[in-house]
Amino acid sequence: MIPRYSRPEMVSVWEPQTRFRIWFEIEAYACQALAERGVIPKKAAKAIWDKGSKATFDVARIDEIERVTKHDVIAFLTHLAEFIGPDSRFVHQGMTSSDVLDTCLNVQLQRAADILLADLDALLAAIKRRAFEHKMTPTIGRSHGIHAEPVTFGLKLAQAYAEFSRAKERLIAARAEISTCAISGAVGTFANIDPSVEEYVAKKLGLKPEPVSTQVIPRDRHAMFFATLGVIASSIERLAIEIRHLQRTEVLEAEEYFSEGQKGSSAMPHKRNPVLTENLTGLARLVRGMSLPAMENVALWHERDISHSSVERMIGPDATITLDFALVRLTGVIDKLLVYPANMQKNLDRLGGLIHSQRVMLALTQKGVSREDAYLYTQRNAMPVWRGEGDFLTLLKQDRDVTAKLSPRELKSLFDLGYHTKHVDTIFKRVFGATSLRQTSAKTSSAKTSSAKATSAKAKTPAAKAAKRA
Image 1 (cartoon, helix red, strand yellow):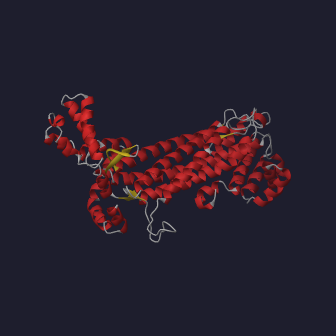
Image 2 (cartoon, one colour; image 1 turned 60 degrees about the horizontal axis):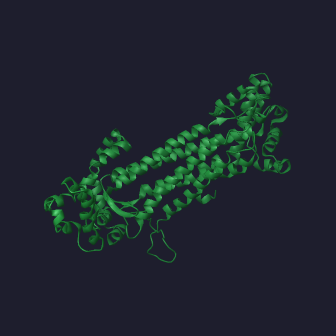
Image 3 (tube, one colour; image 1 turned 120 degrees about the vertical axis):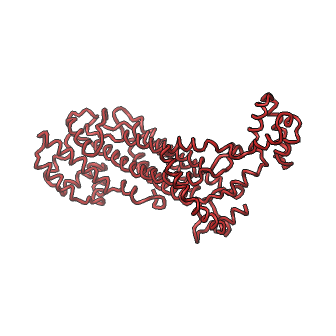
């Protein structure tokens, strides 16, 4: 992956030096297990560990050897022998290249998953904070992109929190599934190496022995891992697209933070574009696209072939590095997201009360009107409002079929915004838990005064003025 979308911690998981270090540990642990069984001298196993553990592997030298051997593991073993000496003849006894390659890949995927899980924790914390901040901030819910009924901005974020909580659970499961080790030799029969060696190496590396490796670890495990990354990427895109829609000039209910000195366009100095969330949409496509090759890797010929190898050398680093970057970027977007409650209220009022049409229809049915007629009475008063011909409540009060069943006072009561937010606490309890709800509510209460001051100050900022004009 290019440096623009890479973070050092994840990149280091996939660096050649890291890979060769893991290869060495697999070989050295296998030697220790063989020594315990009396297959090789204990003195040799100790020398291999002592010399190799202190080494810095010469990546250029290994590449030089591989240009001749055309085999990466043999090139590594040849380089290992150059500084271990005669005891190197005991390295790789009864093993095959896939024992090293597959076990190493799973160690790397484990480490990558740990970084991604930490990323998800940070993202969840940011979403939760903003969800409680705007728990009761009313905004319009949309279906098909069209105004539907009121929700709160906090509920929008609670949905994202629940989704990324599921993402975390899936990644934990995918990490567990990928955490297997194979030291079973050619075609996986343990003919030249005892299964106890595999168990020893697996324990040392924090893995489990692969039940049946057939020389390679079954790729359905990897397919599930990369599919999980693809689903997480899709969740990133879902939230990113929501923010992009909310930032449109005609909506402007929320907006990416625009820093001092930032430029939105080379041609138009007024522009403030949702570049971060657009970028996240693109990165999500990349990660999701890498899940299909992982699934196609499942079907290998007989006990093994290497059609999966080239794919994994690319998607292993690229998918995890890209997703790591995307999760961190999304966390920053949520953490600094500018939210405009005044614009949300303005949009709630934009349709002249039509967002309460369902309540009117249901109230009519409660008064004995058939559902078909109730729908008809309500819709015939709603359509003129769509055309800009009056407001919904006024038209309803002028409709004899409606007023025959509902008094003006009853009709007005149906336009109460609070009716739509009465179960927000219930939903938040389901998403965040009762304890979290109480703790955050206490913090919210104590912060009301400072929040009011901050709101007053924000009203004077360029962003707030832009929101007011929208």
